[in-house]
Image: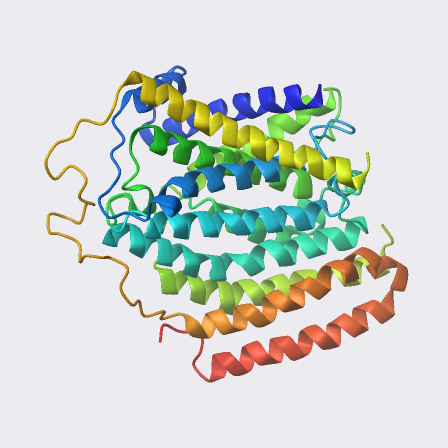
Length: 299
Length: 120
């Protein structure tokens, strides 16, 4: 029963991400675009690049999709409404997100083309930049909840949302989430306009459909993670829990997709310098701040 | 729900995702094959041909960051168990981890002063 609910909410979520993405990109709200786009991609030819590393090329989009689905599996929609409430939930999300980098490097290596390869290596650099900003704010969240269960993390925010209790961690985590899902201005690996699609450039037809699906589920998964860890998950007055979760997730999706559209794309080394010279010290300050406030005000 | 059952569900999700992708491939295959045409399978490289193969030696300009990343990533493995028991242990936990993080942070400052935090 939970699995069916999970699949339905997954489909609805992906649909919303596509509509919002199209809205942010073109300025028009096209409600049929996701379905038409999927049919068009399925009917398109999908030639294999010559001399490709076939295994890496074929498996990469699948791995991206699997990693994103696994993140969503430990996200609670409401108390009790969760696929698997793992004892290591927050850590599991880290582990699953690590495979995003593996998938993108595979899709960069696979087609044996220079633009894709540059995109793949760039994302490896991007991982070095964003990884600490994912794990350190999450550790601070776990300190407050005294648990890695995602459901306990949600209930630990009953008195005050983490976004307000740990504003520094919240901002860092949102930025890092945009880097993981390579949204503008952090779209280094696919960089339309300079790498001609980069890692996604050689994918067409059904392969591109799976790649796009993986990317969309990834955006959805990260928005859900932000909602769970920082925005109090299903908590809210009047409306039932799942509705609140959905509203918050949609709001975060809009923020992530529309937020960076008017900023120039960062260069790889600029991104790394900012995240290590400013981001990591700020993340450590965040841990220290959370530690001190937890000792002064219990809970 | 026992942990084993939870991991079985996760394995089932992976199997379901693989099944979905295979189904999509099957649908696309049933709609038509790829038509063999000349130079259709050449990877795009802005008009010129890519070097063949494209898997050439690549200078990782960011190895200074990468080494720091290894140190910090190891440290995070210790942070998670510590974070869970933090409130039980109280001030001791803060001081213990504070000293540990301070040493790492001094390492970051040292690397910065030696010019590791820039494109090499």
